[in-house]
Amino acid sequence: MDQDEILARITAMVDDEKRLRASLASGEIDGATEHERLAAVERQLDQCWDLLRQRRARTEFGENPDDARVRPSSQVEGYQS
Image (cartoon, rainbow, N blue to C red; front, side, top):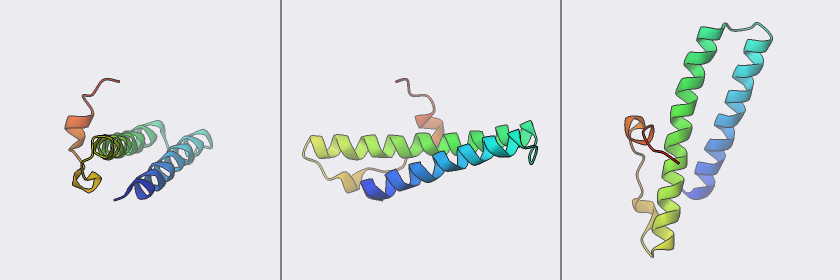
C-alpha cells in the first residue's frame, strides 16, 4: 500500500467509527456490539497509522518506503505516543 492508499483506508475506517457511533445512538446496535466493532476498527487504525509512520520514516532516511510492513496489532497496540 502506498501513502495515498493508507490515508484512504484511514479515512474509511474513521467513517466506519462514526457510523458505529450513530448506529448506537439510534438504537440500531447495542453497546456491546458497538464496543466490539469499534475495538476491531481501532486496532486496524493503529496498524495503518504505524504503517504510514514507517513509510514516512523510511522516506526521510533515504530508504525504500515499500519495505514497510504491517505489524501485528499486538505489537502496535503497546506503543506510546
